[in-house]
Length: 226
Image (tube, rainbow, N blue to C red; front, side):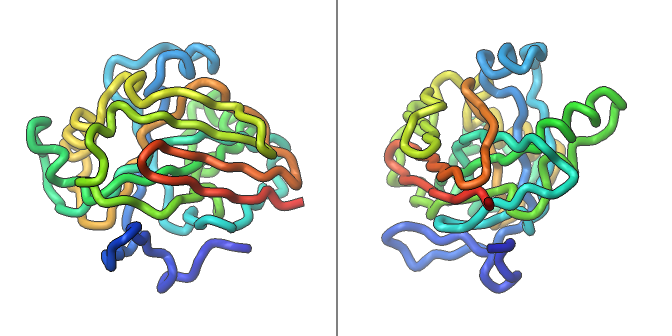
């Protein structure tokens, strides 16, 4: 399965008629200290940002397709924020008011391509933004999540848990993320923010079934193309 058509590329919310077309996708790198260490990278003092195109999005039951120019594709489970009210330079104290809801996603990464880009001082766009690189769950409305900074996050491969952490371990919590991102990119309704992955990332092999789950939110399951 390839990326959804433009008409189908919208997120939906559990127990709600709300639907938001996907706009820009902003992602955080190294937002968990243990993940930064496993990647042999410094723990950042300010958020590390990169972008995915909306064409990266697939949904539950979809298929992730590794491009032929890569030999190593890895999984990264993440809490995802859906922006419901836009703004620029949003204060931290009102940041959650701009979040329509929460979901869980998988930041699929071409690790070999990314490594070569890092060596050459080049952007990560190809490694992070290829078609099918952004599996997403159904979202839940923000009022259904008491504290997004205290949720269990897991990823399993063929039923075996590989990532198991809590969003309380994020270096930059939800409020700081929204405020920081909006100081650089004006946020708009339908924008998504991938908030970073914890330790335990690994290689996805052909035929693998990947399931990312977030407490109080739900899960997304995708298959890796064989």
